[in-house]
Length: 313
Ligand SMILES: C[S@@+](CC[C@H](N)C(=O)[O-])C[C@H]1O[C@@H](n2cnc3c(N)ncnc32)[C@H](O)[C@@H]1O
Ligand SMILES: *[C@@H]1O[C@H](CO)[C@@H](O)[C@H](O)[C@H]1NC(C)=O
Ligand SMILES: *[C@@H]1O[C@H](CO)[C@@H](O)[C@H](O)[C@H]1NC(C)=O
Image (cartoon, rainbow, N blue to C red; front, side):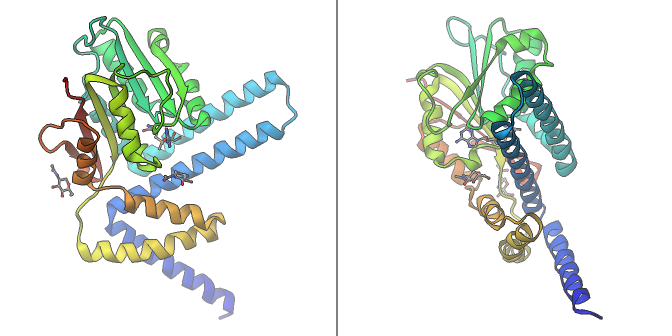
């Protein structure tokens, strides 16, 4: 057997062990896959931005290329999400949005309904909200702002929104903004419903984002968050998985993608996000009132929905 075979064999064994351990720890596996996918999308978009910057294409060509790339990114985003979460992300998003009953009762005195979807990149949550508020609840005056810190992600949403009914498109606006520091164009006490799905985990300052949410919501307005959460598994397997993931995943990232740091970061961010009760307490600390447990587990706690209401003083 030559040395090359030995190395290959070692890698195979390591790979199979990782597969077994990750399989035994479903939540971590799911989180890891989603994190890797987000990272891949970001890369694709970054690469595309670079191409555009250094390219010598005409304006018209540029516009066409941008539209093409964004719709293909949006398509692959969907397919990957479906494949990797076995369709669960759709079920979670449906459950999240239908539980919000957007547009069911006219809210503010003017009866305008103001929705703000933060980290809304792809439009997945926003488009569902529009369907509920406009088609299901027949709200007469819906305004929805999709906001994201990444202009390329926002462009994906914009491109996808072009296939929506006109009435839905008319309700939409797009805003590049950092959730921890929303611009003056979103005034205090102006929003009826604030949503954030699979975004808050990556915010630099989560308490600051919660304070901003509280500031822009009107009294009685609702904060709603869908995010990966904690499954209480077998403690031995969890510990085993942790050891493996912290040493093996960055290594695989280095070998496969030539990028150790990003993968290192991914495992850490998955581990770092506060558990259900802890996150609920952060929402309360930001000034929101919660009812019951303040959250709802989805699929055994792989994900969770947290809600808070800004008290009417
Ligand atoms: C995984 S995507 C989620 C997209 C969408 N909500 C969904 O559920 O399909 C996370 C998004 O968060 C955005 N994001 C990250 N940090 C942010 C921040 N500080 N403020 C606003 N958006 C942010 C990213 O640009 C990205 O589009
Ligand atoms: C957010 O994600 C990006 C890319 O995955 C990473 O570079 C950045 O450090 C993350 N920020 C936080 C606060 O988690
Ligand atoms: C949610 O799931 C977590 C982890 O599995 C568990 O500890 C917690 O009790 C559950 N909470 C509710 C309200 O079901």
